[in-house]
Image (cartoon, rainbow, N blue to C red; front, side, top):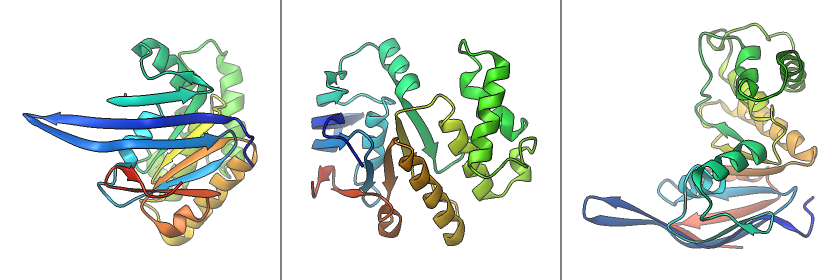
Length: 227
């Protein structure tokens, strides 16, 4: 369950892309509060703006207008290095495409986000082993991605997203490449991760997948259709 203090507040967020002389409005004034520890699904059809919104939420892109309050502070105009630091400290990402490096092991893929920090390698390795065990891959530590099923690869990606102990986990169509049975397993695992106290934001086009969340925000043509 979420606390009363929102971790994220979006106020009239707009995003416009320039394509030659064309101004393409993708987000047209989106306002959402997301509580600390909440599990929210952002659902919409292709072209609704949900992936653009996810990139803004995860500090991967900037809004064209509006205010983004993260833990009560407006961050919309922070310089890139500050945004990058906040992104690394607070957010973990799970994508439809797993983005695993094919020529290194599952363990090495999970360790990757921490290799450029100050954490000793031995401690990183222990943390990665614990996370892979948590997602049910204790016996696959030294397998390369090509030796794993799609569901197992997504579990590796989930463990990697948790390495830096993020407060917010962003999952963009995490079951998009998986069959229905494996999708249910991945969503149950995501729900378990949420149960550990993390804020989870799920981006999906699928109504059945969105039902795993506590609350659904429906996007249509760059606007929120519900609250």
